Amino acid sequence: METMIGIFVAMFLMGLLSFCLNRKHMLLMLLSLEFVVVSLFLGLYIYLCVYGLEFYFLMIYLTISVCEGALGLSVLVLLMRTYGNDYMESFNLLW
Image (cartoon, rainbow, N blue to C red; front, top):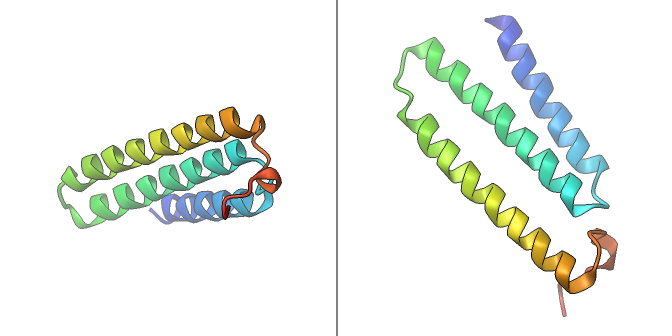
């Protein structure tokens, strides 16, 4: 069980590190956020298995994370059509 928790912590920290390092491209930022979401799913699964609880919350979590991913991709497509690239430095979101 300790190895699973170690894998979860390593995945979560690597996802956060890649999010911080890949802040120039929006697509890479979205992929890093999805990796963090998957690692949190693993952490919730481990937690629920250890305490013998039901897995209904995981289904709600997966539903919300799919909605978050679809929203992120739609924002990416909108920004690509508006600006022509996915560089975060070229976006002027404050107008």
